[in-house]
Image 1 (cartoon, rainbow, N blue to C red):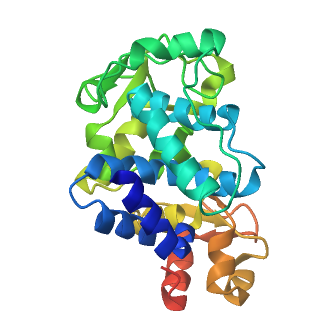
Image 2 (image 1 turned 180 degrees about the vertical axis):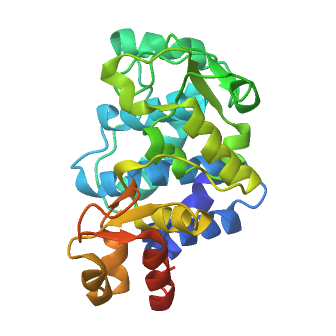
Length: 293
């Protein structure tokens, strides 16, 4: 039944794949009493599985494994369940909609990597305590803790896939139910991009969940325009600047889609470093006037 509904959904409304919000709405229509399927399909959508299928010649086992591994590592999904979901997408979209070869079957015989996933497969969603080592992941030897436990710490670092950018795109509901890795010390450099300071973690959590303005020293990291817009809107009294080549005049000349298309830098500073930085309040006002969001 799940496969039939998912296939029908893709056949009837394939156009929704380009819009996350429309895709979520359609999933809820087709799977009204199965929130876990909806949530995990949204996660696969955010991982780019549909675009990846469009660009690959064949949905091979190696192709599928990368998405299965991310569901297991990042979402704590039972391995067998993760494989079934990825197979579902590859068959219904890759094979039946796009007509591409699809290599079905268990992802066995993958050496140390496959063995490292085995202990996790029996655990229910969100019950992991450790994750296997990966250069893309926070270090595996650090424990996963509930957010409430992490917020009791006085200092340290929190492991989040994608670092600050990955943390900012998570919803308030995600922040309240997910577990994160915690380290009292600075993590090894090879994975430091996936760790954020406890202070910043707490500030973002309090903003997303409690509605408090985050007080963070932004260092010029590139973020999506929507995230920057939300931050400057939540922090009207803070000295924030947005990097725009050509400054405010250049921003005035841009259309809505052009403004949203390119990630921008966000900086905390007493004054603009040069003419290519726009004051946060001016940035927000201009986007409001243009109706960008």
